[in-house]
Image 1 (cartoon, rainbow, N blue to C red):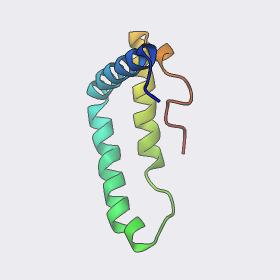
Image 2: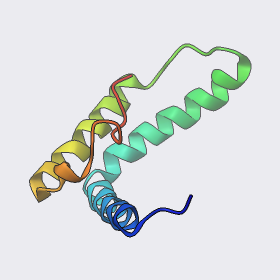
Image 3: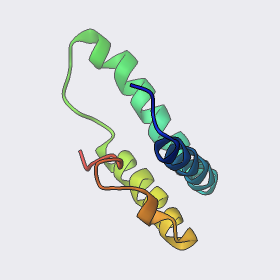
Image 4: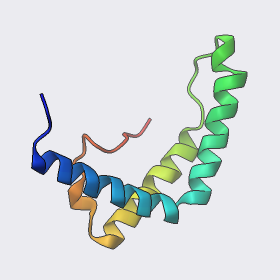
Length: 86
C-alpha cells in the first residue's frame, strides 16, 4: 500500500517540526544519546537488560514536547507518535 498525499504531507510536516525541536533540544539530546550508547555497549551487550537513562530520556522528551507546543505544532503529533515515558 502506498501512502496517500495527506499521509505524506503529514509525515513531512512532522519531520520538519521534529528537526526544529531537535535543534532547540540538541544538548539534552546529546546527553541522552551518550547515556544510551554507553548503556548499550557496557551493559546491554553484556546481558544486563535493566533499563537505564530514563531521566535523560524524559528530559529530552519534555524538551521536544515543549518546543512543539511553543511553535503551536504539537497538534500534528498524536499520542501514538510520541515516545512514551519509560
